[in-house]
Length: 179
Image 1: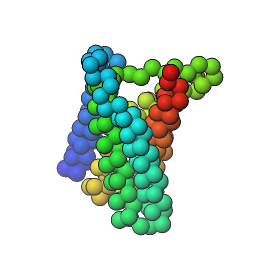
Image 2: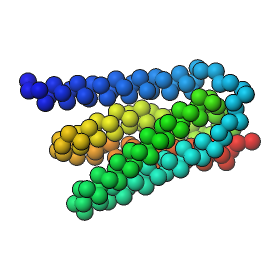
Image 3: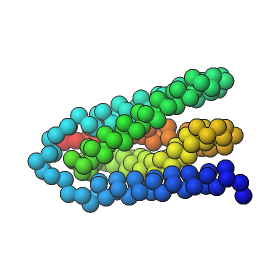
């Protein structure tokens, strides 16, 4: 076994462990950590900011994929790094929002209720998968393992894009159906 294989296994293992820890932390933050009532009105713009950051990430990803399809590797890289930055800013803002506000209950009724929960559940489950996929895909690119990067990116891109777009949809549905 060569050292590159060992380093790759260690890096991917570290990324998976970090992703699992982040997921557990977010689960605790949203569902178990009591939110201080005196802070409930603080930074009320964060959900809208989160939706904008998700939208910008989705747009950046699509532009990046367009450029790679044209063989413009450096432009692709810049756009994908931009998408990663937007997603990272989203995650920081999302953590801040949920540390202040906790979970937001959906108040819609009728057919929109199961539609909303389907979108939300697939969004949450795929976001858990997306985090390590994105990080491993980026790792393969940064370490110039382009064959592995390309192979994994074919799976990562649609999942990451779905998570970003449905993040905006969840925000809009919560906004529309808030009493």
